[in-house]
Image (tube, rainbow, N blue to C red; front, side, top):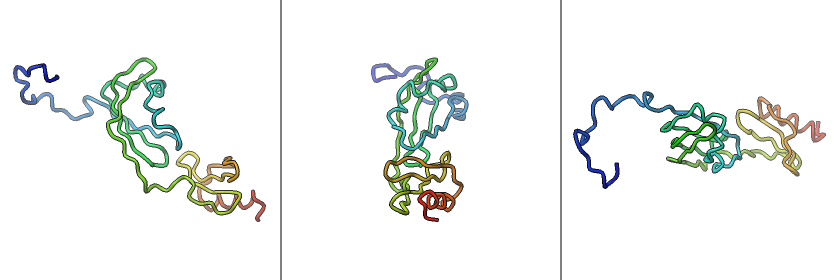
Length: 152
C-alpha cells in the first residue's frame, strides 16, 4: 500500500492467521564466496543463474566471503529461469578481521590462511603466485616454504 491507497476493512490491525513462523513464507540461504570476489558482482542477476530455480521472491540470502571480512543480508526481489534480482538490506564490514596475508616470514615466500577451501597456502612474494595450498596447519605450510626456498 502507498500513501494514496486508503486502508479499508479490518486491515487496520494484523489478522491472527497472518502471523506465522517465517519459514512458512520465506527461505533463508547462506552463500560463501571466495576471498577477493567483487561484492557488486554478487548483486548482478546473472550471478544467481545456477541457483535461481531454488529461489523465490521474498527469500533472504546471507552473503559473506570466506575470510569473514563482511556479511550482507540480501532480499530476493524477483526470480527468472536463470537470474534473480536481489537488493541489499544490510551490509556490515569488519575491520578487525586478519587480512589474508597475515605472515610474511621471509623475503621470498609468504604463508597465509586463505579460508576453508585453500586452508594454509604458500605464495611467492614477487608475483603472488600460489605455490601450493591445502596445508592443514601453518607449521606444515612454513615447512614447505622453507624447503621450496632451499633453506632446509
